[in-house]
Image (cartoon, rainbow, N blue to C red):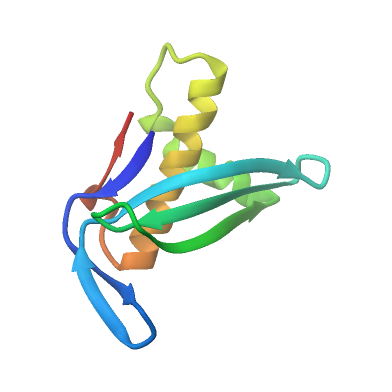
Length: 113
């Protein structure tokens, strides 16, 4: 599964340069921490040639976990098993993260299975 921009976005390329292109996001790993009060994900953004252009993480804590779930639950397809439900939930969160990173609406990002 990946998250991919549908539009060209601008991103850093080297120390002083920028580049425009389609960016793909992949989640490297996820975890629940601190007695299930914190959820985190490490992710990588790739350019259209498959080169890593950014590695980072997002962390969601406390009541923000439920707020995020409430925001994305309507987009979770029914009939998925537990693992696929968790996977799509994290990727829906990643779509929000990518939209903020690149300053585009979430509708300009798609999840591809």
